[in-house]
Length: 132
Image (cartoon, rainbow, N blue to C red; front, side, top):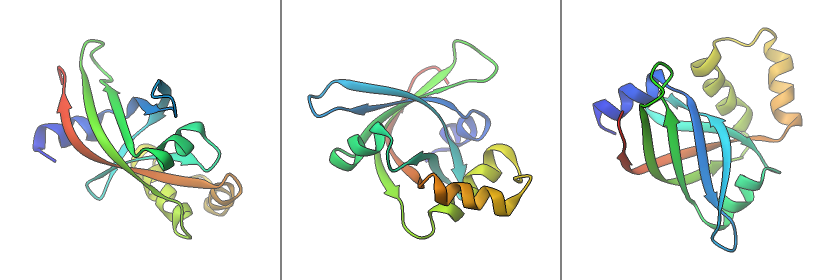
């Protein structure tokens, strides 16, 4: 990931994620993204539509919106890896810390991650574009 992309992603988290349905039509969801150890990630659950779409076709396109300029955005064409193993709650905690700091109650947070069957989407950016 180049410095320009990394810098933009460190400061901007509000994102539109596009996955593909079986029939090839786009499915759009608003998500938050963050860089964890240099890797772009977002949180989801096992039951989200975007998860089932990505299990079938790992392609996704992101539109990351700038916080301070309504005309600045970054498009990113990606391949997505889903991390839903035994370390998924810990991965979600690492992402949460990037996006929001420490949870008020760590034990409660970790239990919620397990109860909600939270997982992590990791985006391998293939191409970026846009006025960012």
